[in-house]
Amino acid sequence: MDAPAADRASRDASIALGLTLPTDTVLYLLLPLHAATFGVTFAEAGLLLAANRLVRILGYGWIARFYEQHGPRAACSLAVLGAAASSLGYALLPGLWWLLAARLVWGLSFAALNIATQALATAEAGGAARRSGRSRAIIATGPMIGLVAGALIAEARGPHLVFLLLGGIALLALPFALRLPGGHGERVRGAPRFGLPARIDVWSFVQGMALDGVFVLGLSVLAASALGGQGQGAALAAGLALALRYASEIALGPAGGALAHRFGAMRMLVLLSTTSALALAAIGLGGAGLWIGALSVVLLRGLLQPLPAPAVAALNPGADRVPALARLATWRDLGAGAGPLAAGLLLPVLPPALVYGLTGLALLWAGLALPGPRLRPERPAPRAP
Image (cartoon, rainbow, N blue to C red; front, side, top):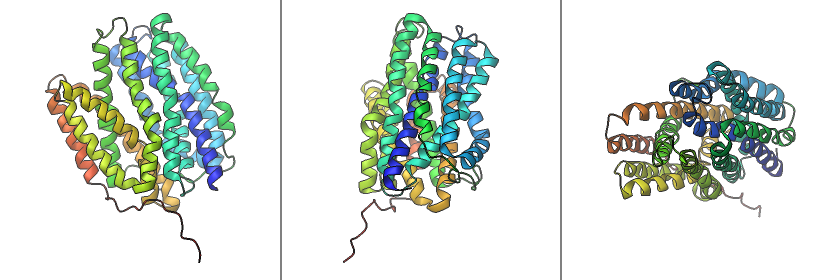
């Protein structure tokens, strides 16, 4: 695949994921606040929000085989239909078991779209970091808009209408999925996904736990509790807080990709992980430190998001690239699932300074344990004399 074709395919896959991802991210906002409306308890809401990660980990082999045999066009087209169906399920089928089935469908759909966006962004080595940064910005646009609009609509008309609308929006991704390359896809299996993790896999687990788990839970709870939790405006406050994460990816994702292109993805990964660890520790101090630390984490996360894929691609060239990306995503899923559980257990019984301090220390250790800034920045090939 040449560079223009890789750019086009990466863009189309990213648009497809950006249009379907709000069906998931808005559920994280509205389900805990409206659990009774969906016919579940608060504890069952937690189970539902974790179910899509579990099925994604367990069902990844089946999705990977389908992607290899049928290619990104077929995989992503079916995934778009699955995302729309899951959103309609949230809107029309209350109760634990129906909602659980919808979450499982979404988990498999996201797995296919996630494989495609990462594989297509790094399909051509030249410009992989830039494509990854642009991809993250495109993908983040959907959740950012969906969280704010979904919160406003839910407060005015209830949460079920939100998911009816999101199901229709997800179907708008189908033309972009149908433009993706057909035929066989790249090999996305072949390396063990669980076994002894590489250092970057350990980093991915800790990053998912810290920045996608402990931090997100604390941020959303803080925003909701500021207006009384279940009171008027709570959904909008939490939605704005969560949308800020995606706004930083839109604004800073391309800049992160450009920095990786200029200085090397691994070098920037180590630097930004270390800085994010210090910002996390500041959140636990309270007062001004909480807000300075939270804003810093949001901004640093936006720069950090596009870096892992090109770093892994450089560490695992050739046929090992896509299996390594899949393994990285698995460890991040495990971390992002463990983070909210850890925060929910520890924050009620331990001082926030200790919880966020330990979380920052774990991220600092994982960042410093990475292979190091040995990867060279992308440079044009020398001209022939």
